[in-house]
Image 1 (spheres, chains in turn purple, cyan):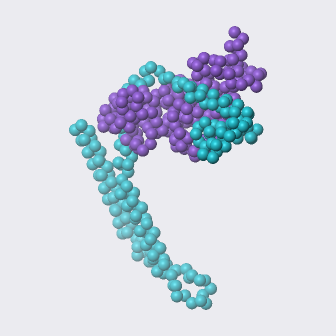
Image 2 (cartoon, chains in turn cyan, orange):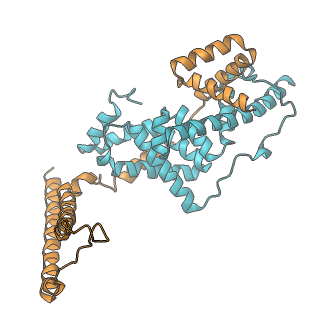
Image 3 (cartoon, rainbow over the protein chains, first blue to last red):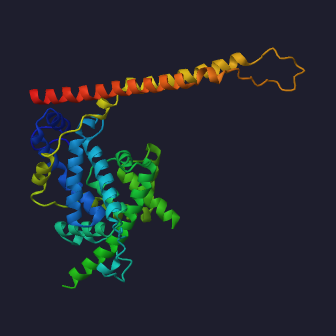
Length: 198
Length: 173
């Protein structure tokens, strides 16, 4: 995620901040706030907690900015801080990680053989559906999917963030996508059913 | 069931661009020949497109302002490498290595390599001829403690000088 808006890459901005212009950090915050907040949301499911975690992540990153090695991507470094902060927050608050098999929120459909018919639903609506389906996953599954698809991280970078082997990430990502697919098939099937009955 | 899982895993890897040349060709062949593979491939492809288009969550409008207000209270901490002096670390490591090497050399000099073959043990364990009382007494302990105190004061002085210089530099900027 090098720059798109103000002509400066992440690394250039970091050098500016380190040279004393702390206001330049705001651009970095605005560039990554959605991703960090989304990661926190995937872990906690609470907007209030996620805002707190995301703020904590940016403050920690700012204070440790002198330790950032320009050999790695800033986003990978930031996501590592976000992952650790999120996990610590969960432990502190002793939040019970709710596995998203809370199927009660969605009505299961009997038609298990229904194929993906997502193309029948509007684009925006479809995106919302995906987000809802991701919310139905466990925090670990939701986090790995977010890092891969939204955080623009490779398997190796995710492995570094989560402190596991790249092969473990590969397996976890596969399982997360399978579970998401199952939930989406059910979810979309229900949506399609309600649309066609209108 | 396992076959189905393998098929899906390979197809995901194919879409992610994780397969080697040979594996890629094999998967492409299967996609041409097998209707089941083709059907699953299109499902996975659509799923991938949906995931790509998923949205990120939006924090509150004041989020970046809140962060900037918060960081105004803090300073950027100096880089870890600037206050962990490698020379000190290497110095300590060197001291212990010299100590171990000296001990080993002493042990080897005590071994009687010309021991006769009639000796039941091939290597006769050396008898330590150290006069401990000569080395460990109240004077040596006091000297050791004094050296520790001097070393500690040197480190404290170094730390305080560094802090003072950093504060002066900050004021100058």
